[in-house]
Length: 405
Ligand SMILES: Cc1cc2nc3c(=O)[nH]c(=O)nc-3n(C[C@H](O)[C@H](O)[C@H](O)COP(=O)(O)OP(=O)(O)OC[C@H]3O[C@@H](n4cnc5c(N)ncnc54)[C@H](O)[C@@H]3O)c2cc1C
Image 1 (spheres, rainbow, N blue to C red):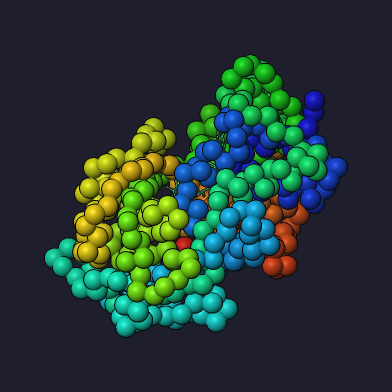
Image 2 (cartoon, rainbow, N blue to C red):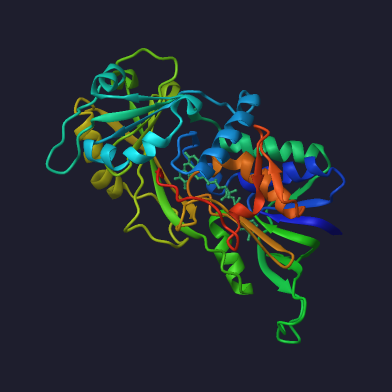
């Protein structure tokens, strides 16, 4: 069968793109190929699945905020919780980020600024510094933030895509890409393009255009055919700890407890009240490899890099048990930490979600679908127009994202 589009990868981005592509043109023949047995089992499932509209870059804010607007319309299906975020800063960090914070439209973004007094009204936290770890002096409370089920979101898009006639094949891994022009040694003046894809069984797949929505695997799959995706996989780890009384951390009785970002190492906490669990991660950078070789979380990392931070800011948290740990990979577009959607010949790739692909998936899917249809602008869920080429590599027009965790 010859398809109009083949999409490799059924993560949240591949599924969102397939859904929007089919919505824009229901007649298109589209196939998704996924190596796992279910959608979202790549890095989508590894995420903390938090969402926020608080970013330093205008591009990130547009992508996340419009996506969240759409998620609100399907909130039950994706188990969305509007639990908020409290982003805490040390005095020094607050000064350093003052320019960004002053520029943000607080009313539009629905955020409030906290001083020490407000912080302690909400959180039972040690505000003081020690030899190594900074104090807590200011914070941002962010209302249009919370969590959702990343797998449910990927499946929502996928199921709607299938209902509208789209096709998916699971448990097939694309092992190689066959280009035209091999006999002529890929003479550059010939129109070289993908002829077909070959899976782990030797089966071939033919299409007019191909999209690689392969997240952190993008560089691995595209480099053998001479494409530099500009996206690199960066390891990140998460840990689940059981705590008897999560409510002790909060000084206010709330239905849903907000995520907390601490001033040390971007350590963040996602409380899951019903499971007496807190998911903890950190924004580590130097030391963590840029390769896809190790999917294991390291207990020593928890002991050395996270535990001391918890002990410092929540000294009363003495009894908890680490019962869950996993690792995944950000697909990092390291220069500006915003997504990349680029195209060469009949090949397009979408990646570089840089740790915020769940919360931006709706907008990224819309923009990628528009790119595949060669439209100049995409319409986002809030009805705003987004210039598709802004996320390309050649005609890129985005500002650096500084609020990355
Ligand atoms: C620890 C961690 C925490 C995170 N926390 C958050 C968060 O709180 N909020 C947020 O918004 N984002 C978060 N992220 C980022 C988020 O997970 C990603 O941005 C998002 O999942 C990217 O989606 P994707 O579809 O591009 O990639 P993926 O979900 O990885 O999808 C790519 C798919 O391609 C498939 N694939 C790859 N190669 C092949 C092949 N050769 N053949 C067939 N199939 C193939 C894979 O199996 C996979 O299903 C986090 C990430 C990590 C690792």
